[in-house]
Length: 92
Image (tube, rainbow, N blue to C red; front, side, top):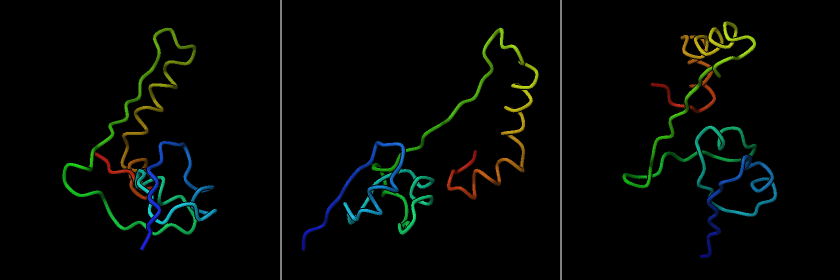
C-alpha cells in the first residue's frame, strides 16, 4: 500500500486536501479543522508533537493604543477563549 504523506507549512490546507494530493496531512489542528473533507485523527505522538505559543502586543506610539490594548485584553476573555477552543486552538 502506498500512502501519500504531506507535511504542510503553507497557510492553507484546503486546496491540497480538496485536490486529493495527500492521504495524510500533518498540520495544526485549527488548520485541519477548517479544511473541508479532512478528518482530524488526533495529535502527533510524544516528541513529535509541539506547542506553538502566540503573543499579542501593542506597538509603542500606536495611534489607537487604548483600543489596541482593549482588543488584546478581549482576546484573553472567556468569550474569546471559547471561540479559539472551538476553532481548534488549545488555550492556556
